[in-house]
Length: 126
Image (cartoon, rainbow, N blue to C red; front, side, top):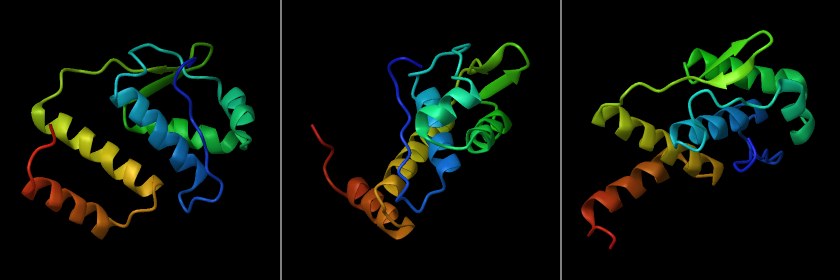
């Protein structure tokens, strides 16, 4: 992971493992990390972020449960190949990214929904 970076905001109400999971999921689903790209070792990423190894391990386990990565002893943790996505899946992924970005900015669910309603009712940006 040379270019994309993961950051943890210790003042955020979002737990650190969830911040790591959300950012890595966004990088994978956004195409910044390709199939078979290797994620940093748990201990390395934990050291880079100043977190406990168990925190990063939990984020990796949740990414694996979501079929975004696969971990193999000796081969590390790699991004799983993504099957062709339906329009509904693409929209759900875009919504997930929007929600994650909004929550990182401190928005409530009501504020996120209001912003979507405003965007749907207004003219499209050029």
